[in-house]
Image 1 (cartoon, helix red, strand yellow):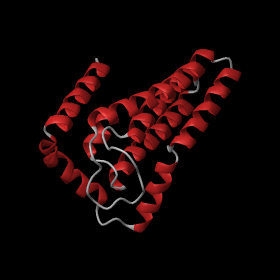
Image 2 (tube, one colour; image 1 turned 90 degrees about the vertical axis):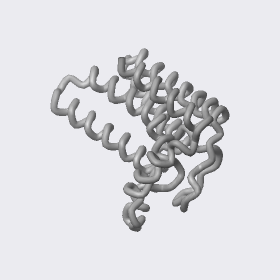
Image 3 (tube, helix red, strand yellow; image 1 turned 30 degrees about the vertical axis):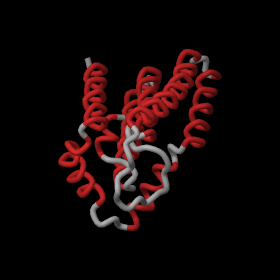
Image 4 (cartoon, helix red, strand yellow; image 1 turned 120 degrees about the vertical axis):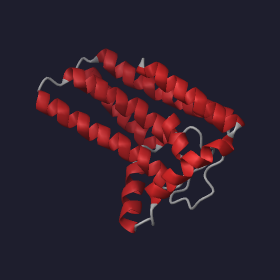
Length: 179
């Protein structure tokens, strides 16, 4: 049911981005203004660091290392699941960006990004890969306290990446939501 809702939300947002982009201004602008504020230096430094942790070379490296560790622990299905999701994320990002071709926001970008805005590749990748990690580790970690700690830390990281993309000015909130 949740997957169906997420797919429906993506389809609706994608349709609006492609055919009626001006309808999203009322949604995107207030959120951008609230998230960005007056761009304090400490938040800019923090969000640049957070977003670098999901750049393509970094994400490929940590997924390969994670898959290797899972494989060595004899979690072979989980290992291949992570590698498959990495490939799927890359395929989805390239495909959807080329379909929708939404320009990036016309506001100050605090990091340099190339290509189109919709959907957010960083957000899609972190949602798919960190979300997968949350599911896998929730099933594998037996100690309930450690399981909860891992879930919270990973969820906080996921949310911080999503917020960083809007804060850094390289995505509209609707790009991140669709991802």
